[in-house]
Length: 80
Image (cartoon, rainbow, N blue to C red):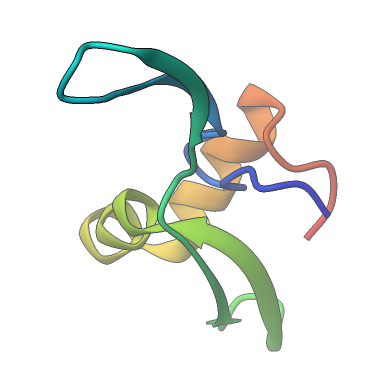
């Protein structure tokens, strides 16, 4: 599975390593992802998500069901 957050849609970005002499070489910046399980009380089951730290904060703010509904509308997850 790719390194994409299933809630916020964050994924790897490209950039440069810049040395002291200002030489630039390509590198990737990866999101801060975690494999985390959440319990859906409406469906009485556990859901496993690959989620970023920002997504975890969003779930604690809005709630898991609201966040999953928004992520499905935006197309970040197809099934959960």
